[in-house]
Image (cartoon, rainbow over all chains, first blue to last red; front, side, top):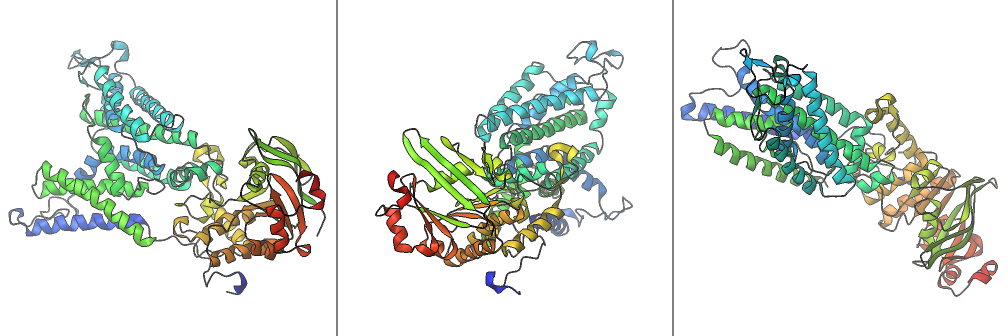
Length: 357
Length: 258
């Protein structure tokens, strides 16, 4: 320190290192939960010393139990795609409750343009449109689905940004509207028998491929682009963002649109995976997507959170679900445990924030 | 020091309906000069600042910045023209770090053809931030910490550091130390001294007599929407200024308006 005249007590300003990232804590939590299930597998008398994640029976060539790993990530992949969008919305201090029903509505609409004309030589029994809408290239239903999602998102964003309706209310309304659209589309009947090309979108591990590639894409976008920076700025201090010349309204509409397009894509993948679309699909998906973001360390007041956190949050939910099946506890316990973990995650996060301040 | 005029206003007036918040303000700031704007609450100080910085649209009058007549449609225009304003309430995003805040809304970017998804040039922004902090002698423990974890003084310093980072042509501070503690106030005052040494012109709105007498060259006093005194620091003292502020005295050249 050479010029003490303007000093502030021995502080320097030449460091440019980042502090300990929040995501590391979630990673530790994830590992801790895995270790707990691993121990339970050894300790519980009826488990006969099974391993949770490791391959102890020599069924595979690798050290891990690949089947379990695949299931863990596969069962969170589709909701995970929604969570990538919800994360962005929550970072702007908003919320999107409409994504679950949007999944159903998009599944119905997209599937209607993905049907095959002939099923086992007979006309498609679930046909929605005439022959003109049959056996279309796979791009058609996907683009229609994404356009529909984008439209819903743009409406959400417009209500939030221009008409200043609280995001909770605007998207709650859209929640009901989308469920209504899903029911109305085919008068409640399922839409089935898609083309092979459409089925491929959701086949095997494809949902995981989509989830992880979209996660990488949006991680890069949120962290390294102007769009990402402005998203954080708006959630952090909307007034400051406006004063700095950011077009807050346009940006919010863009965020809601992107979030709904991701939810719509999740609807495409889900219907492709199931080879059918039903109006009741995607129930509670919006809440699980929000839960993933919350476990991933997002702040509902905006400005804080990350894609990496949300992906880890999704993994935590997947591991818990798989772990409860592993120790043979049924779904009712899973829900109770997940609920508790969501609350615990928020309490821990608040405690950490207070300690740091 | 040159005699170039940085900012000049003529007959600057702002009416809010029937309220004459600012009436016929004629003002001049020369290059390198530090001017204090003083006055009671509601005397027109902040109204004056808001007209110059484009936050509000004036009722009438003219403004010149470096001999160029200007008319700002909004605060961004003013900022682009080189007027950097530090407000009492900080316009900072808590969750972002120092470079992010300095460059908010005017980021240095790469791959601009990507539109809203163009990439941020973090390296360039960090380098420019360090340069700006160095110039203002602001010391921040770690520029990559989020603003949330900083003290009020450090936050105010970040706001002020924008000035140096963007080579602004005029700095306006509206009560920059009103919400700060003693040490933090000192920190901000040190920055003002640094700006003075660097010959950067500055307008300081302040209630703090000691601060004004310590740091400023000239004092403009507002009363009931009008300028009532234009005093050189050497030719006045605290009591004299208070007399102008309260209305016990009015500058000779302003006699007809009081």
